[in-house]
Amino acid sequence: MTASARKLAVFPAFHKVAGRDVLVVGGGEEAAAKIRLLAETSANVRVFAATVETETGAALIAAKGTWGGTWPDAAAFRNAALVFAATGSESDDNAVRTMAREAGVPVNVVDRPDLCDFYTPALVNRAPLAVAIGSEGVAPVLTRHVRARIEGMLAPSFGDLAGLAEKLRGRVTASIRTLTDRRRFWARFFSGTVAENVFAGDADAAEAEALRMIDAGAAETGHVFLVGAGPGAEDLLTLRAQRVLQEADVIVYDRLVPDAVVAMGRRDARRIYVGKRKGDHAMSQEAINTLIVREAQDGNRVVRLKSGDPLVYGRAGEEMAVLRNAGVPFDVVPGITAAFAAAAENAIPLTRREAASSLVFATGHDMNGDTLPGWADLAIGGATVAVYMGRTVAGAVACRLMSAGLDGATPVAVIENASRADHRARAGRLEGLADLAADATEGAPVLIIIGDVVAEGALELPLPALGVIAA
Image 1 (cartoon, rainbow, N blue to C red):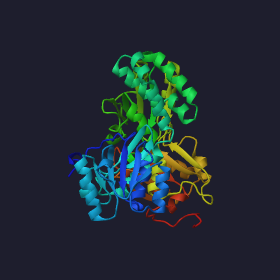
Image 2: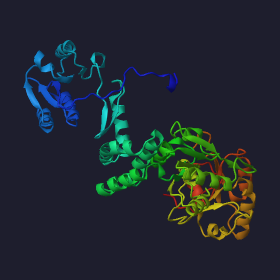
Image 3: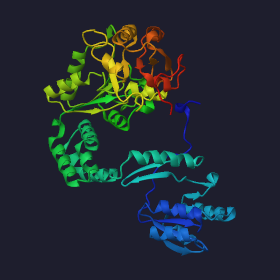
Image 4: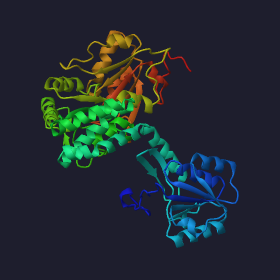
């Protein structure tokens, strides 16, 4: 069954518990876990048990709850929002379930999913923001793993940001009339200088900036984000890039950016393809520059989505200059560049104290078409060289390096589609680089790594390691 065909057996919802009783029947370890979870709410926690273990008692004190006696009577359920049966006895749990059902109160029977009216999620608390993760009771350990990942994504001060939004919501609605303009305001609020000030602990500055933005209203200018999509694997996209994509009004993307990454953008964002390949440009760089400036000046948040890192052969320098000249604000969101991904998946250490203390990012030709401009001496000096876009000039690169004095037996690797499912890697000697590169798939992104460190990678080399000291 495909992911789109799967249907949940539960409907996620949040129960209102403020000022209401939540009953926990049981005094052992299972009860303690539920009390600790309830302590993160403003519910009145009431525990019923013949005896209460030390851990449970400590949790109850921390939750500022009460010990209501050995067993709840019918009156205990009248103000109850929820009930947890955690006695450890099947018959007692069933009795609690029956009483809760008769009172019309939802009940959770610990470790008995088939008897539950609701399941307890793993909770990420950034009050008033909350994230609940559930698995319909079948995989609680998995929900805890997911919770840990989300905890790392959401700084504790996200709650303060949400609180400020709640405080200003009425003023925003009164001052910014249209739904589109309010959506743009909140996108800026949660991702721009307001959020930055909150995360830095300066609540006064955050509120002052938010009030300035409210006064500016629809006149607020757009913004451009130059975003690195990474080398291709979706899970190598940074968390910041994901967030910015979700906030974009317009996504301008290149040829090598996977469809799955583009699809991470907001559903109603406009998507504009501007891909370029040798001899086939969907849009010239000048036209791209004009496009992103125009969209930003129209008040849009524009994501210029590039493969790899925008500052490494991504022409971000040209776009930043154009944006500065036009007075358009922008930010750069770095991505994992192809050299790092290619080296990582083939276990090639790009630097090593004994063999390569420097790393060179190079392109096989400069803007005038010259091959190997200016960096041959660095390779001869022991640097590892990562050559981008080098497939068609691999032979010329090898000839120039060997003519400059680099040993023809120097290890090289030719890696295409780094980090993707269809990646391929081949290794050999510098003198055979042209043949290795010629075997690469036409149109695939190809990266060449040159240097003794290649011999340490997880590649079959037709030569012994040269000048590399074993670990």
